Length: 245
Image (tube, rainbow, N blue to C red; front, side):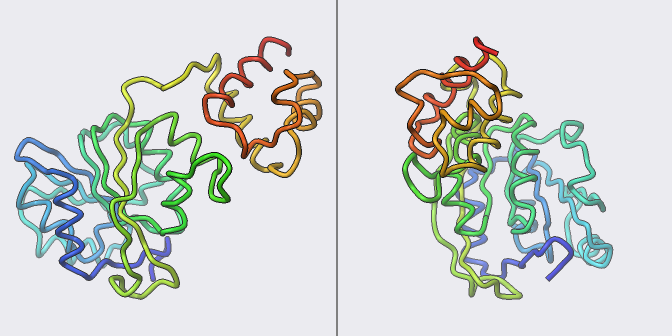
């Protein structure tokens, strides 16, 4: 296991399907985070115009530079220290380090790509696509719904990785929305409210809003918990709070 808890994908059939899901063409520039020993990278390089692989491990960078073709650019860096907006790519195909899936995903959503096919820990993948009322419904679920259309394509057994993790993985497709599906007056406030509300998910929204913002909210939201609201309703509630504070 490496610094960020990455588990290398070793099953070539699964890697091949991940590449197929991404529908790579000769005009694509693909970003891969954590190429590891290059199983995905080599497959991507055969189809894409260019592959940009970000790898933190200097020994792996040395190894990859010897085995990968010329259309692969290897960046030796911690992805969390890189400004991805300065890198030109239109697709993302990765087996992400499980421990930093959330910050990397949010970072990717700030960039301009057309499609991502990513392997996550299965539990994390379920949170991405979770619906209101489910135990997996979270801040992540709402933000992902607001920013993209996501779906789980297949479950990846833990036996497909080395070292073998304790849980299965999942291949997830993420397609960014051209525009959000509902209106919020202030996105920063929306994200801030999501953090506060989901960290107090057993409290009613009336109490949460009163405690943090000192205002009363509409009766239809007052006695509900955040996990009961659809993303659109959360956006509506945020707009209502902003009108009163």
